[in-house]
Image 1 (cartoon, helix red, strand yellow):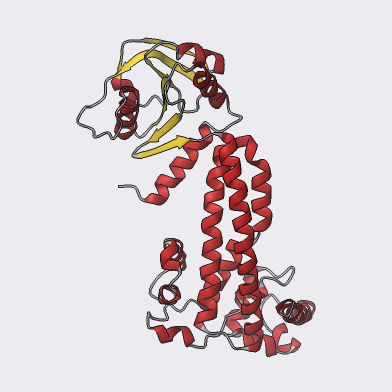
Image 2 (cartoon, rainbow, N blue to C red):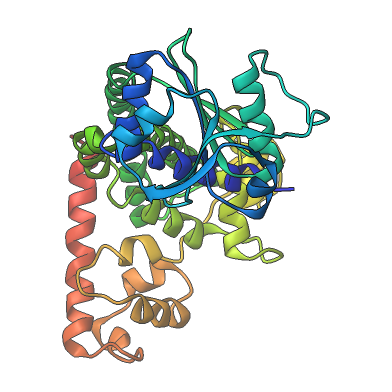
Length: 358
């Protein structure tokens, strides 16, 4: 059985097929305006072919005009998986009646059963309700009006701006505490919590962007500008503070990403994943960063050199207090780079303390 993440990826891919700006979407909009209705199967797998009964094989290049004209007939239309060819038209799809369907209309019930049986993308256009419904496996998704989606996307961007501002403040606070050597599990869990909240909003906006197609370019630009380096910084925070040696780092990230919005409110749940236990007192434990996140902010310092540095100096405070000569001894760090690291850390500390008080 597929997990929800795989379902989400497949849904995104299906939405991209019929996003505004695509030829398929243009054809669907024409059918919608004509109020003729339609049933379109995307993909010609053996399972799909075995369901085809009657109709005719045409195998012509796809065009919105052809789709519009062919939908005037009652039968289903079968397209190639890449939507570049119209393979069959006016066919009856012989579905298995034992496959459960929540739909009441014949067209939508058939569409749902085809999707469940073949795992192909199936599109049903309602002539009475004037809506496009997309089916993929067990997923049902109703395509909304572009204007409504754009309004929702703009509202989501405003929400993202607020959450990103809160995350920025938490990150600045964590950086200041790292330089002062006063970090607790509470501070780390708070940053991870706020990072994940931002990531969840980004996921919602991405769904809107896929559905908007070429209409979503501006939203996409705004989103990318707002969340630049958010995931990377979150990854380095986990790398700095994770003490859970029983699980791989990828598994730790996956467990954090899988926390629901309600579970994220419990900082103890995040602390437990990082290996600090679920006791409420665990949040008060003093912790010491390895230094990945801060060192990554120093220009032209490769990750391999950062790893060598952390291997030589097991805590960020030791790196901070190391002399230029001591840094010079680390593999991959010469005298010039050692001075650059010292200067870079000094500037970062000044900037963090300044940002903290703004």
